[in-house]
Amino acid sequence: MKGFAQFISVERGLMLFMISMSATFLIVQSLNLAQALYLSVTVFCIWSAVDAINNVCDVDLDALSDPARSQFTKKIGKLALYTIVGFVALSLALGAFSMVPYVLLFVGVGLFFGVLYSVPPFRLRKTAYKPVVNFTVGAVPVLIVAAFFNVFSINIVALFLLIGVTTAVNSLWEDLADYASDITSSSRTVPIIFGFRRGLLITIIMGYAMIPLMILVGMLFQLGWVYYSSLAGLATFITVRLIQKRHTIAGHRTDITRLHKLGELLAKDFVIIAIVFTFSLMASSLIKINPTFF
Image (cartoon, rainbow, N blue to C red; front, side, top):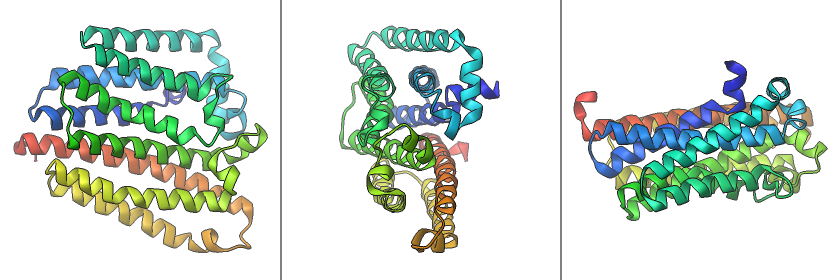
């Protein structure tokens, strides 16, 4: 089960699942659990298909950056392809079940960009366009929910931008963690183009630049103190981590191996931050529509 969970990157699927739940509650302003689950499962299937496609295409590269996942992908053989077909078919079927053309369109957009991300000859994951593709895939859940309820407003645009930027920044952290394998495969990701240290600094700056957008979303949707408390806690956590590692980041004589390990550590930290943030967003949306939850 652990290998399969890594194969479909279940932690990111759950993150987008929670985002879809949050978007549904915030848009309809009621505890419409059945529709929220339907839309969230649809998004989970899209992301699982996209990540499974990527892991099949990256099986050789992952041998260096994530050996356990690479070995599992090779071990299951054709089952990997059946898994992809299953999640793609389920995603499209769930999109069609909505009877809303734009929902099915956005499901297709998510899957299409997943193909552009991983499959040769496109392989945009090996280019500086990787964050742009991740932005699109990450923002698709908000578009699907908005299309389903036929609601488009400045609030939705802000949420769309926040989730898209969060996913794009997450891809920059992944590039840092995959630096060694990307060098081997002649990729042209941001850390390779600018150098690892500059790539790390760009990613840190991008991470902090998300905070005003997070605050704006909280203000537009009138979220409570739980949302802002979690946001403050996460900002404090990463700031303390960066202060602890400031000599490694700023020191020009720092051993490159130590710098690479720091990039891997911060990449893992950002995954935790993203999951905690999306959970707090979902919890805050529930508290807003029904204060008895807290």
